[in-house]
Each structure stands twice: as C-alpha cells, then as structure tokens.
Image (cartoon, rainbow, N blue to C red; front, side, top):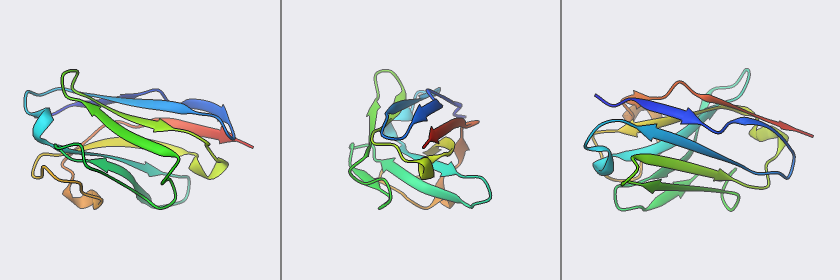
Length: 124
C-alpha cells in the first residue's frame, strides 16, 4: 500500500513560481513510475508530467519548458517545480504512483495510487 500526500499549492500571480511536493509512504517507492496530473474546473483530468525509476521524464506540451518533475528517493518525495505560471495552469494538482511500471507513463489509467490533491490558483 502506498499513501501520497501533496503540499505546496497556493495562490500566485501570473509569471510566478510554485514547487509542489508529494511525500510517499512505502519501501518500494523508488521502483515506481510517478506522475503529476491536474484537473481544472469543468475540465477532464489531464497529464502534466511523469518520472521513471531511472529519472527519465516526460511532459505535456502545455507545460514543457516551464515545469520540471524530479524525485528524491532517499526522501520518498516527488517534486513539481512550476515556473512562468499562467492563469490556465489553475487546477487541482494530483500526485500519482504506478506500482506496475518503472518507466514514464502519461496515461492516468496506469496509476493505482493517488494523493488527495493540492489547489494551484494563478491570478492574471
């Protein structure tokens, strides 16, 4: 069983930065693919970024060049550094773990553990 707890969300002006953290329980965290997803009001959940066991990364086109996903296996934590934030980045951000894969995965259906979400609001 894996429990994920996100933190770091908040209100920021357009152009600003935030860093989200996701603390994971479980001894096998380092072997899982991890991902960040988001759901904006009235929209479907969408992929944001993913990182493999080997620290390979992949990003949605909408955040590429602005967001950076990283992981610290010693701390059982995944991060999402978000720079140059835009109002359209406003959403609830969710951390997720894919215990069935070591590699990057952008399909939410493959993730079997999810955090409770953290709100990010970007004002214009």
